[in-house]
Image (cartoon, rainbow, N blue to C red; front, top):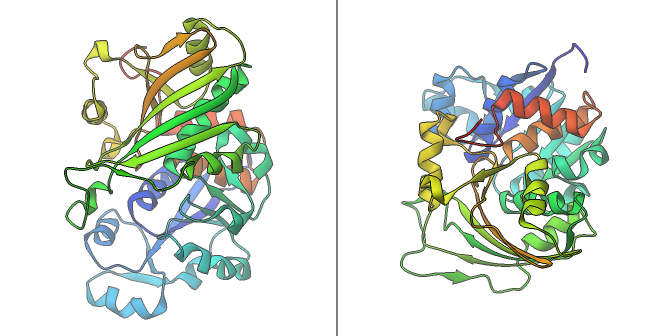
Length: 347
């Protein structure tokens, strides 16, 4: 690592952007130069209260933001002149329009999973392909569901256990803060295609994965739930499979025997543990539900969609800038700084 701090910024101070901004501020080798947005509502005003420098993503929004009482430090062009890298957390499709602007400014960029793999030609999950991102000008941190898929399946692959995987995803209907906008009530909506996009998306990170996913949207707004049936390379014991998951980074065991019996249980637990915003960055895998039958394993886990990609975004910054060459070391540093755990209730 170098002694010079990475000058970073976030474009889009929403669900993911505000969390990435907070995580950047925690890193000893990074400086958050500013955040950019186009909104003038409570979300951006909260950033003002927190003392963050605010920039207008679009010049035409600058006066509107000023009129709303938001002190503007400049426009996005002004911000780009001060930084090494930007994490684009803007809504789907907007980030793609910003790519040429970033290139012109000579700024590296990290996109989120809503953008297409073809935009950058590289998709990122730290434990799977960190080294392939070293020195790149751009990468894409895959979506929350894809991140969890890659984390768990590569854990089995790295233990020489994975042959093929078939997963069912029960997705939340919308982000909690948008619950008043729209949503699904009293129904379940199947995605119209099999495989759903998460399986092919995981293959953009690890092409050799034999994975198929199916998904539905359900009438809840907090977190996703995955169910997996995985064919193993050989008959295995339950302890062997648990050891594979335990050896992997960013997977934490939860247990129904501790009263963690539903998605809301873990949400409450994160608040009790004092997590910022009640966030859970880990894949929370039910240890006492996991079942092994010969060469098949069945397991279920929870994905906190608002937070799981935050540590991946931090590692992506380190990889693109090249301050940490070894992926496992970057993961270790990020996890230690953020406060990630392998166990929530046990040491």
